[in-house]
Image 1 (tube, rainbow, N blue to C red):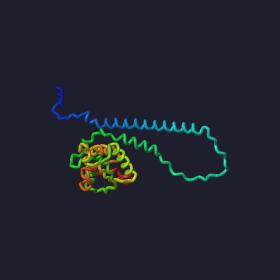
Image 2 (image 1 turned 60 degrees about the vertical axis):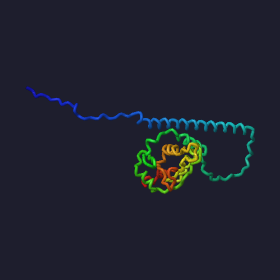
Image 3 (image 1 turned 30 degrees about the vertical axis):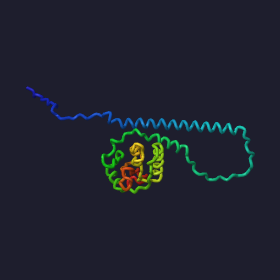
Image 4 (image 1 turned 90 degrees about the horizontal axis):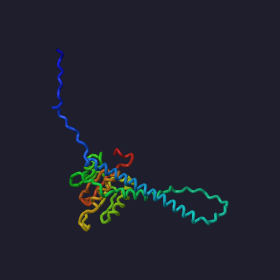
Length: 234
């Protein structure tokens, strides 16, 4: 007789199926995708408006000088002078407008806030030790801005300009005063939640936490920005 082959059943083996992604897991990524698409559409709209404005101004200029008589040559030599580098003012204004529009008030960051007394936030990939060091004051506050008392649109514009100046000046640690809401009609801190949402959407912001009592307490945030190039390891 031949040898009998024995088949072993795998029913008793323990195997836990991998949990699939849920809509809640995909919601942040979908929200970021929609926001990126909206920003791109807004940038294209601003670029088209700028091009149309330039075309209208050029056409108007040609109409205005249509009857002008050119000056006769005078034979003098005009020395070349070094001209200052042009500053793209319109592009800066357009970029600032896009940045302001890109700071959404609807983004939900509550799930990403650390559940401690200071409600701190850190970007993905930033360790919790960074927040602890920030809370202890290991980075010197280089500049601050006081937003309380401003309307929401005014505060958004002021914050965008302040962060842009901080990046150009290579300031890493900032204090942002949003107020405690004591002067608002509802006695609620209107800007407090919005400032946190705006900061979480800025690529240069690595982390923030509530200021210590002597630095403003619950009415201010201490913010850590990305290190300048060449200092990323410090």
